[in-house]
Image (cartoon, rainbow, N blue to C red):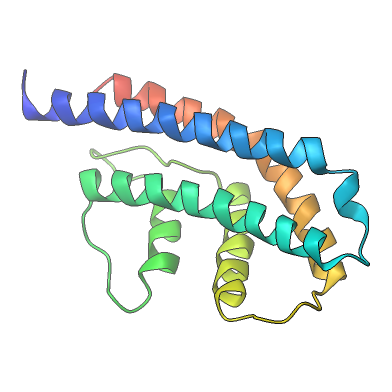
Length: 158
């Protein structure tokens, strides 16, 4: 088996595993969604924040794997932002885009939120921001699996 085929099979498997984890996070969110709307309980804000951060981190992990396989060039200074930008690119003769512009815009919100969350230690969350992110999260759920499925089809053709 040649190296490209071996790596593409590994990536396909990792993509499928990632989609399973994403689905578990989505299910967790949907099961708690109604109870999380109480903005007087800081536990709800913490739970929502963790859902958003975990979902984004799961996607970023597979994006890093994709980048390593196809490009392997990220600057050390702003690699999180650069990685996300690369996922919307079509690299002629190398790979198809992983995500759409719409997904990129939503994911960039979550990337910035994750950065903020890492350094926020208070219990008073901005519920307007969390409600906005909830809407974006639900939009992302609607499209990300379709985009990853499309990319898996590309990987299978390698």
